[in-house]
Structures are given as structure tokens and as C-alpha cells.
Image (cartoon, rainbow, N blue to C red; front, top):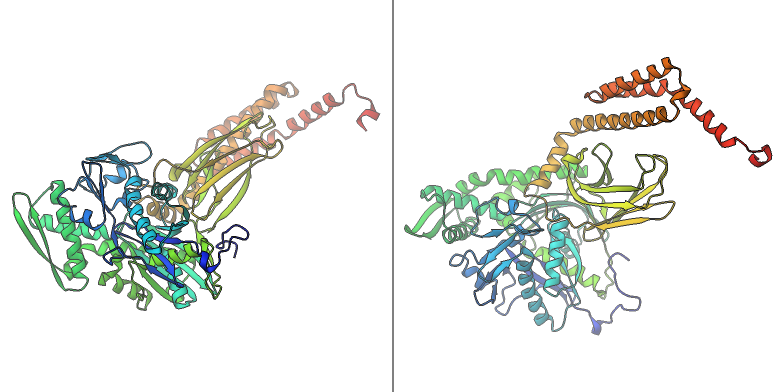
Length: 621
């Protein structure tokens, strides 16, 4: 149990020395904090008994900040300064942030988009920190002491930049992050421990801004994530937006002013929530110059407007099951997570796909925080009287690798590998006397670097000059329990080393992760052909360069006819390498290699004679 029982030797606390730790679900729509008290995980409410904190932050001209319910009430009156759904902008650039209409004034800043408010520019990290500060204060007031740390949940498909942004927000809020935990995995922890479930389970997590699906195997206290999938740009907000667009179209409104847009989106959310329990609802919002407008919408109409969004989630579920090598019938149950799963059409579609009603025993808004609280309690070194002992095995969502010659990707850690994980692979130099190597770290499933995402670049210098292919460079990839990557390159003979903690400037664009996976499935054959071609072209370039070096150094060993024959073979190989037929290139490589065998033997004889010249037999022995 070394993975979860993290404490200094002798630090395992006695019951009266219990260390206070919490689980936090930093959500797109709502956030909440939970803790284990008297052996039971429970959400901690505010002073009015409300466990959910709207993920809304309002900045005022005097520099003060409002968070939660009071800020949400002002969202329509002060839309530019009231930040809603900030999680969607975590670790993202301007192009991602402006993909959909919003009332915000975005600023294109290095590293991450910023939002201009009446009290100055604010990054999504700073906005998120305000939410976390309120949750921290609530927890310390409820638990009666200072927190030693928190487990904070993130969507399974958050990339490295988004995870790092979440940790930065926690630090700004004065929280020590014990671990970042994937939201579907947190839900499985809550269900697995609460219901003593065993077998294969799917966790369908449709929150306000993101969608995740994870397939887990629960066996005697071991939580193993088999496969994960998702869409970082699909959530309940998108369902709201469809209703808002229908309202705008029905009333002929065109482009809305920021305050009107916020009012319509708020009204659309209320209508969506009403349609979860009623067959009809009204979208009502006051519009400047038009007064109060109302548009009726039926549940059937709402289902039709959003059918493609639901289908996107179902396609991802099927693909993730294929990744796991499982049939629908092998899944024992489906856990529903996220407020958006309250929509009847979502539950009905999941029930139809899996042939069984989804599990909704625990509140879908709270289940993630409850699971995070359970793990936070263990990571803090607290154990229950029954000595609960369990192991969590999570996975990475996309493969990690390096660029090799010819723009090819050499995958070092495949997607769905269990984390934490460390894997190493040896590489070598391409040219004689090469003393430095550029390391380019990439993420994705395609065979060519151009089709993957660049994560980081660094250089290893001080490699001893050797013949091409003689140096041994060991590159190690390490992904920690939070899913954050570090890469180290080490030259084996001299021990020179270089490393980098991968912190890309901003996250993947809105549909990029899903697109990368979809493209990898649809273009696998094309990718393999492209890889085969590029590999042969790289080998051709290497052989041509080596042959030319040999001719320059020892061309006098050849008769004119022999030299002409080698030159002809080189021309044929060069011409073939500019084509798109890897077999033709391979054939020309073979022809040149065969045509230079005798020349290579003569060069070897000369090298040996030079090495032995002037030396006695006993010296050689």
C-alpha cells in the first residue's frame, strides 16, 4: 500500500491527531468540498446549508471579489466582470477561448488567455483560485482546523497545461495539492467503497464544460483504470447554448449585447433544468429594447436540438470500450457523474446502450468530491478503524514520445498506460562527431510529428564525439500520479544529462484531443505507409552521406569504372528517395549497399594496415 499511504516514517497519526485533508471538485458550473468525518465522506455545506458553490467570480471596481451565489445573481447585470465557467479557459489560448460567443473581453497573453475586468486583467488561474479560497475557508471552518492538503479533481482528458494550471490555482489559494485525481476515477472510488462493488464499471461524466468516460476494473480494493476517453469541449454549457440559440432565432434577435447574452444563457440553463422533470418549459429573458421575451420549448424539441451532442458522447463511449477490448455486455454497471446527467435523454441513451439502468444512487453533483475526500483522507495518513486498504491505478489519455529523424514519432509511453509510470528508451546520434542532440517531446497517436502536438524541446550537450550510431543516449519519460510529465536524456559513457519538466504554454485546443484520437483511427493505414516512406528516406540519406564521406576519404582505392558504378547507384537512390514508393527506395538502398561492399572491405584493409604500421608483433599481442 505504498502508493496511497504517503507519510513520513512514524508519522501515521493517532485518532486524536487526525490530519485534516479534503477532496475538492473544481467544477465548470458548481464546485464543492468534501471530507471524511467519522469514517464517512460528506460534502461540507456553507453557513446556509448549501453544499454547492456556483463556480462564478465577480470583480468589483474597489478591488473586492464576490464568489458563488451572490456573484451568480449579478451575472446578467455585470457580465463582463462576472466570470462564469472559467474552467473552460484553464490552460488555453485566445483561439480556444473565443470559439463560442461570450460576454468577456479576452486578452491574448503569453502562456494563457486573460480576462479584462474592472479591477484589472485576471487569468483563469487567478479566477479559479478565488473559488478555491472560499472552499478552503469553508472546510477549515467546518473541520475546525488548518488543512494539511487537498485532492483536487480534474477531467480525465485535461492535458498537462490544464493540470498544471489547476495546481497553480490551488497554490494561489494556499492549498497543498496532495494529488490531482481524474474525476471519473474519483467517482469510482466513491461507488466502489460505498457499495463494495467489484467487476468492470464505466463512469460516464458529463459536467458543465467537459465530458469523460472511463472504464475501470474494481477487484478487492484495487481500482484499475483500463481505458479513458472524452471531450474537453463538450458539457452542459453546450446544451444550454443550443436552447439559447433557439431562443435568439425564435425572436429574431441577431447578435446580442454582453448583458443580454448572459441573461439568455442563464434563462436557457433554468429551462434545461426544468425540462429534466417537466415536459415543457419557457425560456424567459429581458432583452434591451424588446422587454421580457418568452419562448416555450418542449422536452421533445430540446432532445432534437441536442441529439448530436448526446451522440458525440455515445461515440466516445463505444470507442473507449474498443480501446479496453470489452463488449458492452461485460460492463457490470455505469456510474453517472455530473449535473448534466440528470437530463432524462442522457440516462435513457446510456441505459439503452448498456442494456441496464445507469447507477444514480449517489448525487451526481457530489460523487466526485466524495471520492476525492476518501483519497485525501488516506494520503494525509489517516486510516479507519477497519484498516481500509486499497490501490488506485490511473492511466494517461494520449501517447507520449519523441521526434526521430525524418519527422517520425517514436512512442515511449503508450496511451492508457497506468500511472505513475517511468519508461526509458535508447537513441543514438545521426552524424559522425555529433556532440549535441535536440530532444523534441510530442503527444498524440499519429506516426508523424506534424500530426501530433508539440509539448517541449530541450538539448543534450556534451556528447563525446563518436561515429554515427555509436553514442548511447538513454531518454527517460516519467509521468507522476498527477499525470504531469518530466523527460531526462543521459549519455551513457560520460554521464552528461539534461532534463525538462514539461509545461507547455497552453492546453490543447477545444476538440484537439478527441480529433487526434479520431484521426489516429481513421488514418492508421495512411500513417503506417507515411512512416514506412519516411524511414526509408532517412536511411537513404544516411547511406548517401556515409558513402560520400568514404569516397572523399578513400576514393583512390577505386578504379574509374568502379567509382562511376557507385556514383550511378547513388544517383538512382537519390532519385528514388524523392519519390513516394518505400519499396523502390529500399531496393535502391540494397543496390548501393551491395555495390559498395568491396569498397568497404578495401577501406577496412587500409585502416588495419595504418593501425599496424611501425609496430612489432609482440606489441600487437
